[in-house]
Length: 165
Image (cartoon, rainbow, N blue to C red; front, side, top):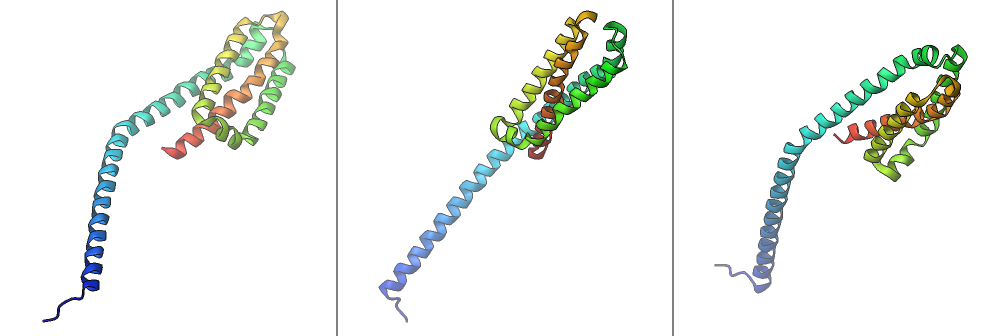
């Protein structure tokens, strides 16, 4: 019979202990992953439903304003086609820098803050429209600068959030 030397038995007991520790760590990781998956399983659908609902409702609200804005400018504020064209120029011009620096904005503020900023700018714009009169109709150009923040920050944040879902 071969009797293992003390060095051999010591190394085999060390490798057995290492294997046992590795199994314990894998079990802990599996339990942690199961807990995380259960948590994701409960919250993930709610997050997706909330996100899609938010986009749908916000998109519908923005769509109503965008479709009726020229009617409002011409019929209520007694503006002309030039003012309507200037509104498009100003609103589109303010989208460009937001899209250009979107990744920096995301890094600094995160998608949730950008979505909130977008909604705040939208509400400010709509309330501002309601306060305009034919005498103050050109102030709509100032309000349209918020369109860039409304539209561009919404889509920068939404695309980033969709990547994580």
